Amino acid sequence: MISSMMQTAVSGMQSEQIRLTEAAGNIARAGTASETDAEISLANELLTLKQAEIGFKANALVFETGADLWDVLMSITRDDSD
Image (cartoon, rainbow, N blue to C red; front, side):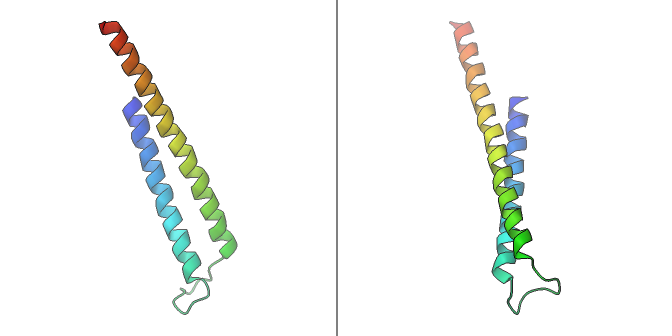
């Protein structure tokens, strides 16, 4: 259960990284000749960057909590074997 929680958190962080990369690329292309037919909204892209930051931090916290739980579980296991 702990490992699946940590795997889910890693997957979430990877997803946020993709969002961050896409938004950064859109910001870099805004106002250039290579811009697509749809106009890029800098406000929307900046919002996406902030959302990605918050999502990444939340998933990192879940991962850290899983690591802490794993440490506690290993501590209990070691204590029982003594």
